[in-house]
Length: 229
Image 1 (cartoon, rainbow, N blue to C red):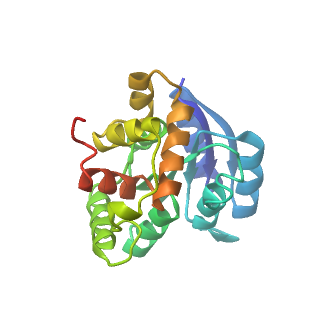
Image 2: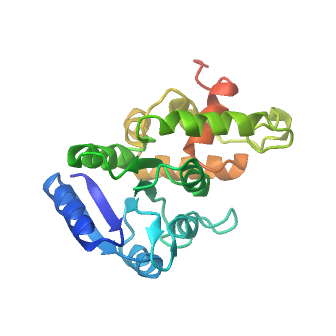
């Protein structure tokens, strides 16, 4: 099975078509919504593993939904109580929209011009813990993360002396992320559940004051966590 998915988009026909494609591909579409307010209610009630989200909603920007899912360091994932991977699927490929979504906590960003099979595959990869981007957008996001990491005083660019202590299991997860493994692949290698790995990733992000998996990967590579211990 592909996992539990919620689809949020203000166009009913597009929303229904994607939900149908995902269901036929083996996913369980546990809810749909067409606005920010409706999305928050559906997410709290259904607790999905993946959210497919449009940014242009009638009652506010879609990034507000992502922020509600991520919560704060003091109250992480306050909306659902468990990690939710967010794949933005939007008609906009503007740099500001992409970076705002990723900084808010989106795992990936796909343009609506993608073919149906590409959309389904992107949701499948997102469910496995991968960061999925339309061609060209990945370089944009990584370039921004690299620039931020070089800024004096930035969380991503702070030295190891200021880094909080990670547990042995969190270090294991960080090494696997640095090697490019998805959350599901890392879980199989560690002999734990997919949700356990997602929880460890969230804890590491909070401890290191990083905003998303893209920054986490940059940090892990820069600090040498991709090397064999």
